[in-house]
Picture (cartoon, helix red, strand yellow):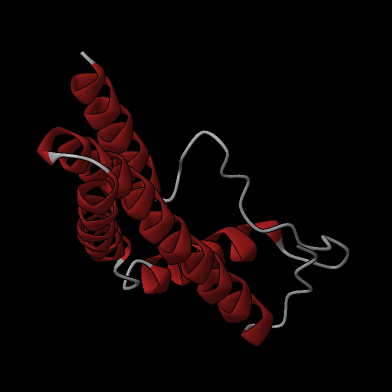
Length: 124
């Protein structure tokens, strides 16, 4: 019962992260004084397209693999094969979310740096 729930949460979380438009995504905040908002929207779209090059999904998969390996080893040391399997599952979910989060932070940095390079005052 717990595995399908964890898997669903992981898949939904990664899907939201990959699109960069998850429920908590607010985007960059700029000082709008003297800004042509039409031009800003075009620049933002271009910067987001550049940031799409950050391999968020790959980082999530790599994090899940490392988390599963570490969790499995720790679980194996502390218990039996059932404990190792459960620990590997928990490690995979945690590692996957951490990898995706790291990728999203880098993606946000790319967007902010891109906008700064185009002359915008990014506040967050």
